[in-house]
Amino acid sequence: MDQRVPAVSMRNITKTFNSGAVVANKDVSINIYRGEILALLGENGSGKTTLMNMLSGIYFPDEGQIFVDGKEVVIRSPKDALDLGIGMIHQHFKLVDVLTATENIILGLKEKGKLDLKAAAKKIKDICDQYGFDLDPMQKVYNMSVSQKQTVEIIKVLYRNADILILDEPTAVLTPQETQSLFNVLRNMKADGKAVIIITHKLNEVREISDFVDVLRHGEFIGSLTTSESTPQEWTDMMVGRKVTLNIERPDPLGLPPRLKVKDLTVRSEEGLIKLDHVSFDVSGGEVLGIAGISGSGQKELLEAIAGLQVTEEGSVIYVEDDGTEEELLNQDPNKIRRMGITLSFVPEDRLGMGLVGNMDLADNMMLRTFRKGKSPFTDRKNPHKRAELIVKELEVVTPSIETSVRRLSGGNVQKVLVGREIAEAPKVLMTAYAVRGLDINSSYTIYDLINQQKQKGVAVIYVGEDLDVLIELSDRILVLCEGELSGILDARKTDKNEVGLYMTSLHGEGGEAS
Ligand code: ADP
Image (cartoon, rainbow, N blue to C red):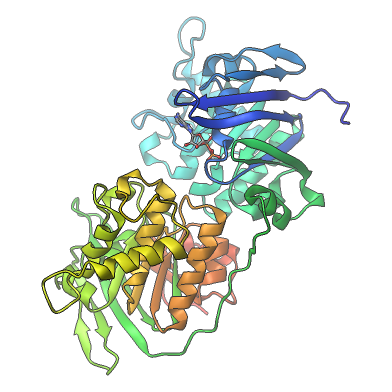
């Protein structure tokens, strides 16, 4: 038994929603100590955020007790939490764009007398120096990168003297280099005796930054492990509740000729901002081309331009038929492009806003995509039914039946339908973006398997993903976008996260083919 008094002890915490219909946390007990970093792990929906929201005063537990430094406390609001030194940095930032870093940080603070901006800026500077933040206190938020905004959010809670910090998936929005800077800050906090809790899905980061791992599954506490004495495989097995294979197979590319030839593709936003700047590359059948880049670097525009869903300013996208015939895709009807075998599944934030009709059942949603395929304008109901059944079976979609309307499925299940439907089209080019966003580990690996099967069938796969580790394992080549420019095309078997990260921020060379 650890004899130390924990900074925070949550004991037998239970929290339900919807009058008890959803049990988000069930009898959970965890301890966090000062000078340590705890990684809180669990699949989506396992109750991590709910648990942390009770610590930071957003939710109030139905049952259980919370102790800070051994004393029982009642936390009814974020202010209560901060008064106890507990600060949470959420995934979505709540900053005021037109204000400076300093103004945002002191916003809402009632200091005695007149607000002394100068003194505040000085205190912020001291915090930056102490923990190794790089921030200009006078910079306006609208000029900031995502990582700088996150810095402001972290300093905001440090400014209020928080010494128990909770970070909810802080690296989801960061490049590998920015992640390293954040980790340096976290190490400094740890050395300074702060208690840090980090929620993350990236197991390599857990290994790198945390001292302990606590695992939740279906709202219950499963166990606590010392990071250095356990493995990602053990953590995953605990998260999932059974053994899972964490290997992504990467068959060799088939060495087929180019299927798509993209040349000088240029796209501007409606406001006239450049979104893609003379991007050129080929993609062949039987290979997976991964696309990396900080979010918003032109990934969406690239895929949509190929699919005919994006107005382009310049360039060409040539589709090469099996017999070598070439056809220009730009300015073609998107339906025609689909019929040629070029499919796109884009998993957006709003999954129902994109390509699935919520009120229609699964089979009808299949039909939406397939009815244009046959020669007859009349639709064949049997075929989509079969497809829907196949997708439900292969991807383990949880649905009462294929007659259930898509709106009633959970987000992850909708997503499987979305990706499954594109694959069921037997495409020549399969483009998929954020295919595994929000999916549990098993479903994610099912999707990687499906992608590899497509590759082995000779399909040209373009894969936009968020997890660089996965992107490097799954792809044959990685095309890196940086602010709409192609900053490099890397051999996925030879590159690493660090190199890809450098290309993402364009620190590496000027455009063109690397490696
Ligand atoms: P995690 O952070 O591990 O992904 P959450 O804590 O967000 O998990 O969710 C745990 C469970 O509680 C999920 O089933 C989720 O749908 C549910 N849940 C979370 N917040 C609410 C809420 N405000 N209302 C209803 N259900 C909720």
